[in-house]
Length: 77
Image 1 (cartoon, one colour):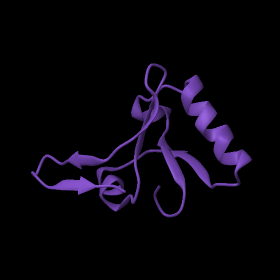
Image 2 (cartoon, helix red, strand yellow):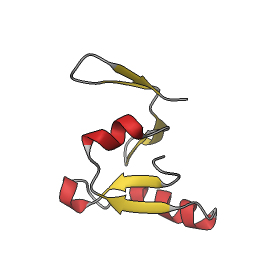
Image 3 (tube, rainbow, N blue to C red):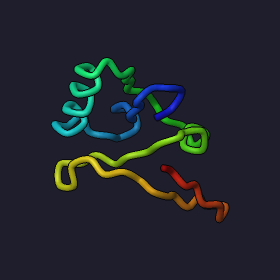
Image 4 (cartoon, rainbow, N blue to C red):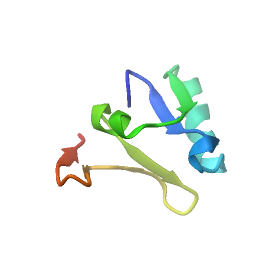
């Protein structure tokens, strides 16, 4: 979640526009949750208050923490 929206990387990021990502978008629409495909910058990751990984093999999984290259660790609820 970033700025009150579910944000996923767009195709310019090298991210595939696959079934799982499309399902997440549909669920967001069904629940009236703001959803956006866009280029995600490194600064966006730091500002996000929640994160998830979506893939065909792992479906949708929450991210609990993320270690940045500078050694800092971000923790998500």
